[in-house]
Amino acid sequence: GESVGLHLPTLSVQEGDNSIINCAYSNSASDYFIWYKQESGKGPQFIIDIRSNMDKRQGQRVTVLLNKTVKHLSLQIAATQPGDSAVYFCAENGAAGNKLTFGGGTRVLVKP
Amino acid sequence: KAGVTQTPRYLIKTRGQQVTLSCSPISGHRSVSWYQQTPGQGLQFLFEYFSETQRNKGNFPGRFSGRQFSNSRSEMNVSTLELGDSALYLCASSLGSGRGSYEQYFGPGTRLTVT
Image 1 (cartoon, rainbow over the protein chains, first blue to last red):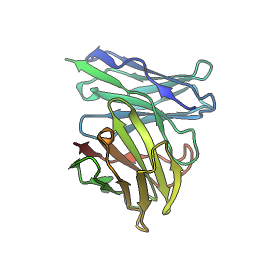
Image 2 (image 1 turned 60 degrees about the horizontal axis):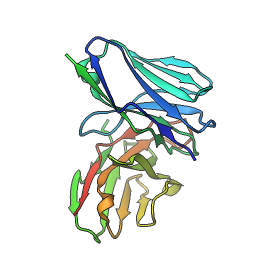
Image 3 (image 1 turned 180 degrees about the vertical axis):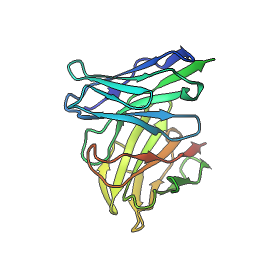
């Protein structure tokens, strides 16, 4: 069945450094991926998305990379700030409609 | 523009009871999806409603049900509550329904505790 997984539960990063969060997915038919950020007490917030016909997409301070060969997704955050401290989830929208399959999440802690 | 609102924000119920949670999507949005978030299972899709019809359903028992009204507001119901139903229930709304077509906006969630 479909699954999207993360293997790094916690990432501690110095303020100003770059962060990289990784995600593996198992459904080779997946063609649309999203990264979400969830802060304490809030629902997930959309960060950036990418379709399978792309390898890279950039946003403001964030870059998502997609490697379809090894079914791997990553989120890079440039110049990490204290406000970036949160749990980050990758998700796949592989079924009809809006059904999302989420990875397990990575907590990012930014040290001042 | 107001975001997705969920009521109540916190709820405590006893095993065997039932509960109804409410979600008001962003104005103009016609799709509402529900997710369960727990420390052990993470974020899991429950169901999606679009134009008052259930579009997708996740792998949850029949105790979990939902509906959508003509104004796009949605409710989910859990009957015969079990301890394992304790979770954060999240609602997400989007303009439409289509694989990879519409950004989803999440509400703050309802924290359900079953004792």
